[in-house]
Image (cartoon, rainbow, N blue to C red):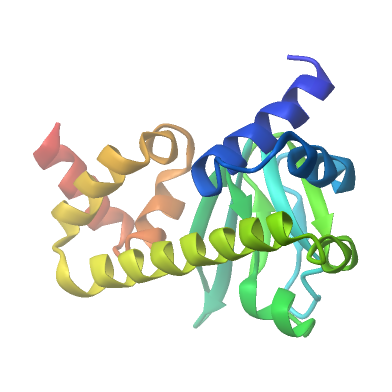
Length: 195
């Protein structure tokens, strides 16, 4: 896939799942504001204490957000092709982040800077798109919190397999276990029961 095709794919994917009615003019404005970055596997692209200065559209590869708790890293979120990744609190407040972002694979991302977004928000269509992205992020956070609170380890893993098979196929098991709030041993037991 050519570079321009990847950019077009990610814009189309994100818009079609968040605000499919966006006009071609709005899509082109958004696309023009994106800055391409190639990221090597294992690279930390946002460290704890740094300010999240952009929304990240993933064109190729997989990223994860995580944090440290009692010396262990805990995976907060996975993002892959066609997703938007952001550290909401740091981005909104333009204050240091408690989260880190790591590339789990060699990746191509497109960043929409805080400043570029602020300019684009003057356009009602982009403003509505941004609102839809935020609404989607809040819903995902609530669904995940409910999953952690109310579902068994086995149900959490089955739901992840059904809703996000790419994560199960591509992410390291240790990160999947921390994302599901279970030990690697519990995850191994759950996987053995299912398979």
